[in-house]
Image 1 (cartoon, one colour):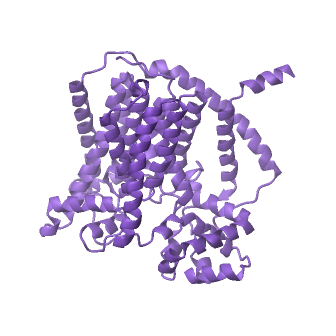
Image 2: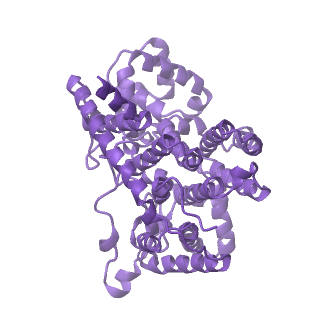
Image 3: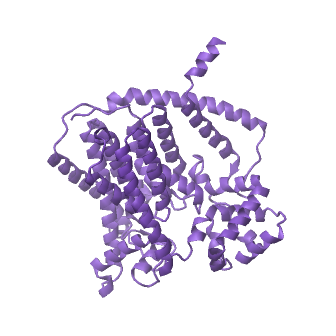
Length: 546
């Protein structure tokens, strides 16, 4: 009895909770069938029913995961002396030279990608932004207006409005985007080197960033997610430096320059993606609450006033102002992807609908079309179907949600199954897809073409060396983030929690309103932050030279 009590006392509740969640992911994932090579419908993509044996397997898996996670915890604590070395930090001139040198090294290493995919990969969403930037389509916020204005500025520089054509703008955007990605990685490495990161690890990471295709591929992928992900990555690095590495918290207040950068970063996050305001709201509220809990009232007031003002102004701009300008043409349809999918699953299952629910759904789209268009892993087949009444849906979003809650209350199991299918790419490490994985071709458009100079001049295809044949699951990096979160909570390192909040908010917003079950580009910022998570895990405190 006493031995059992001793064992129970040693069990950490946060580590147990992580183990329970991860084990649940494994068991639920085993009950989902899916193939990215066949058409998706309720016959080919489904969630099988659960039984008592699944509960037993969940308990066994939970115990195994707990043991493994405990071993990982010990490994990271042991590795801190290998990861961090005490040394004299380089001066700012040396640091700048290091940033310039590493950035140039990355750009040189990525030249084969420029030569093989020139002037960059263009997705159908990118074409929409380009048309908006060139005044070929009326401005709207379906593709964030700030991103459109960036394109417009690029085209203005390259003379697209004075007859120089579109291609110089595409080329400049590819080079600039790749340069910003390279520079952000270089700053990250330089910051870590300055704080005592082992030189060998700096070298290994530099080589990894230079040769692993997921970095240059996103540099040449001309979609809004790359720029947004770089901003989230840079913002997370800044939070790490500000709240964990510096003495700001010990001093009890933040400098004006720190508040300025926090404000700029938050504004970019809000206006570069339409879920940005929810991400900012999440990390702002949680950060202020955590800081208040640590009795840093002045800092909490500073951040609360700063972020509160930004959020209010942003909400007014993206709400009433955009609506008055006619920019919010389909905001409800875009934000209700998961409810739409859950309703479509229930309707496609052949259940009887009450007259009031039937009238609402028929007004949005004929019931037969709900069934015919339903794809368990993507909302687009429904919301972009010609029979989908966008105007009615936007004006009666409240009525649709009333029907949605009514159907979910009647058929909760179906609603949960639909949710698992619609989000599986963002929590199940065994599920992956080529959908929106990288953009190394011109997808969904006939306006632009891509040149392969390797093939043209050397009769050699670089594509064959780097094109992915196996795809990484986005969920792998999400679970790395979740493990880091639970680990720092377990250690009570609340400053490190603040660093994870932006990417955690991103993931939570995806799990609430994602329109497609697979899209690596949505979580690319979490992929970029993965090395940062490892540094967060490698010891309770870095060795500082100052």
